Amino acid sequence: MTDRIPGARLLTAVVLVLAFMPPAAAAGRPQGQTSPRCPGPVAAAPPAVPAAFEVGALSESEVRLTFIGHATFLIESPHGVRIATDYNDALRLPVVPDIATMNHAHPTHYSNHPDPGIKVVLRGWNDDGSPAVHDLGFGDVRVRNVPTNIRDGAGGTERYGNSVFVFEVASLCIVHLGHLHHTFTPDQLTAIGPVDVVMAPVDGTYTLDLAGMIEVLRALKAPLMLPMHFFSEFGLERFLALARPYWPIERNSTPSVVVSRASMPASPTVLVLPGP
Image 1 (cartoon, rainbow, N blue to C red):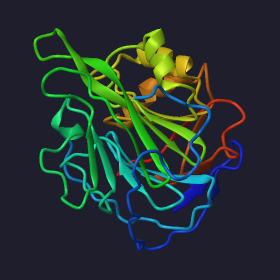
Image 2: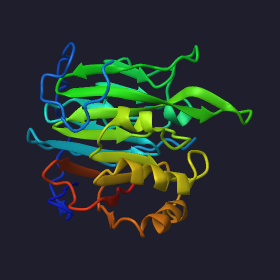
Image 3: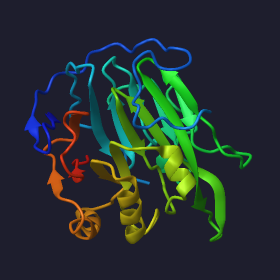
Image 4: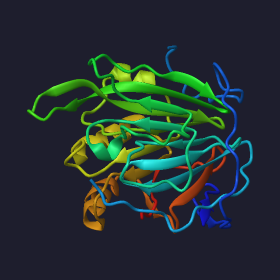
């Protein structure tokens, strides 16, 4: 089932079976209107299969977000563009996405052999150590990235080893933090821009420590925060215990939620989507 959010409250919608065709790619900027709120600069878990995948009509102002597990979400646009975040070989998606984003801190965040049906693969790093730069339009979606650093295996720093991906769709700015290892600089916050929905890793060990993640979320000021990259209910609760003094916590009954600008909570809210 998919929940829609009217304001800060959650309502249950309808489960339908999978059936729709992928849209054609568009060159340059997306055909639909992108959000003026996030302009941006020019420029190993065991395999899991969701028991069901829901498909329903979206209005021009709605986006469906489905938590597949770990750091992978399926983002669906009003025109049917499907995006998988941190696409990897460990988690099986219910559909072949049109766009796959990846990061390379661990194999559960990328694939060396993505499905050949994926039209656009965006890696959040470059093998030569230079920053990855992405800014493209596909259908009614714009995708861009902001490079960040990660820790390397020797305890040092790998510059530009991660990307924060920004998805502009249906006048919303949806941000996936990837395998974030540090708080943001002012320039990075400016590059990301205003945020409506943020998908944040909350394990507190492999990625950024929990106090740092709270700092990041307070800096982003997103109305809706979706935790990811937690390995147990105990690990999730460690994050929620630190988050409760700042934001209300909601738990969704299903892994999917439909969001729109009109449905954004009146005050910033953490929404937990159940994983597989």
